[in-house]
Amino acid sequence: MATEFFMPKMTDHMEAGVIINWLVKEGQVVEKGQPLLEIETDKATVELESPASGILREVRPGAVPGASVPVGETLAFVAGAKEKVPPLPPLSGGGIAKAPQPMEASSAAPEVPHTARIEVGPPRASPAVRKLARDLGVDLAMLRGSGAEGRISERDVRTYLADQQAAKAPQKVGAGQASPLARRMADDMGIDLSKVKGSGPQGRLTREDVKAYAQAPVPTQPPAAAPRIDTPAGELGWLDLSTVQRLTGQRMLESFQNAPQFALGVDVDMTAALLFRQAHQERLQSEVGERPSVTVILVRAVAFALKHFPRANASFDNGRIKLHRQVNIGVAIGTDEGLMVPVIKDADRKTLGQITHELREFQEKAASMRFNPEDLAGGTFTISNLGMYGIDRFHAIINPPESAILAVGRIVRSPVGMPDDTIALRPMMSLTLSIDHRSMDGIQGAGFLAKLKEMLEQPYLLVE
View 1 (cartoon, rainbow, N blue to C red):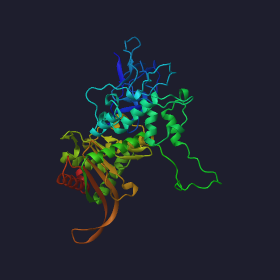
View 2 (tube, rainbow, N blue to C red):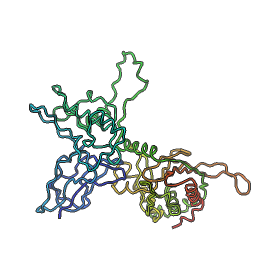
View 3 (spheres, rainbow, N blue to C red):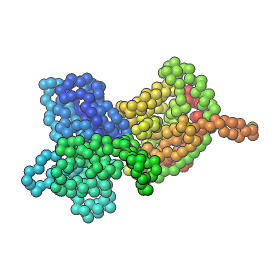
View 4 (cartoon, rainbow, N blue to C red):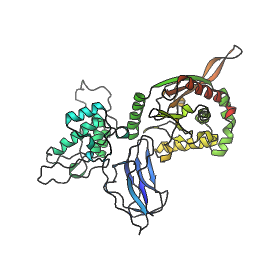
């Protein structure tokens, strides 16, 4: 029986994936689990594996490098040589437009791929966007929204209108058109497309052309030329945000705007935790080939605390609080491409050795930005540890749709008043919990931090 190969939903906010490269050709024999396609998501570059063994057949027309494929769309089939496989229609909506064909004498405007949209129910848009569309004479039903759940923004309306006007306007001899994806990227980066040289058919501008223009060295003035007064000294030019950086920024902005966030902090005496870590170093070194880090102990302690305070392991959804059964802890990892948050599933059931092993694997994958889809999905709580970068304390923005995130500072030897009224230098670490007030109040957040502090200051409770 033929098996569909489709674009999976790999994160809570993923709406589409951009094809980077097919790793096999249509008609080739493939094995189950073999990488077939390399895509770029809102978080990372991912290889999609074959769902079955067989022959890769009926690759969808338009599913080419650079095409944006909505979640759930079928890309091809894996089937036997004699099995019947239904033909797939050309990719529409998020796909890249084909090269423009020579126009015959006609008053009809060419079809603009940005308008290809079939949607049930009224388009999602704010009253202000609906008014703008009415004023400009734009039918919202023809737009594909770029916001959460297909929500249409002001930029979508103006981009659609510009596409329509460009399609109707006569083209100059030798002037190439730009694909909708290239036009959208140029708009995001503030690039004038008239300055970009197209490499596609008939001079068509592609996403790669815009990216190459943005990454090109900024021309310098000849030695004899006088410096421009309006050019800041030492300016290096524009930087091209990766998909990860751009979409992470969008999600953080939405989180900060939509969730009423507040923060609570506590200082933890890490004396016992560091001794606990030292006591288990040799054993874990022999078991998994890696010594446990402070983050490993934090993951285990947070997992225990979440079991006692399920409100911290929840999300706010349509006026209700969704309590998660699984304790899936995301650990923020910084990379050159942006912030990645791989997830340790069922962290409350895993040993120190298992957590150590998973974190090491995540760090190796982050170096090349090659994660499996399941690595980045399903998080219910996040830890962001910047202590290794010398940061004492900070407030982190909640990773939606989660209800809380823990910001961890560095361990610093600080004077502390002891029970016998003496003062001693102790290794202290700051913990700052950012909370969505819709899911937790201050008392509940304080209870979670108090439990976490107890686990770290009495780490024998974490013994496997």
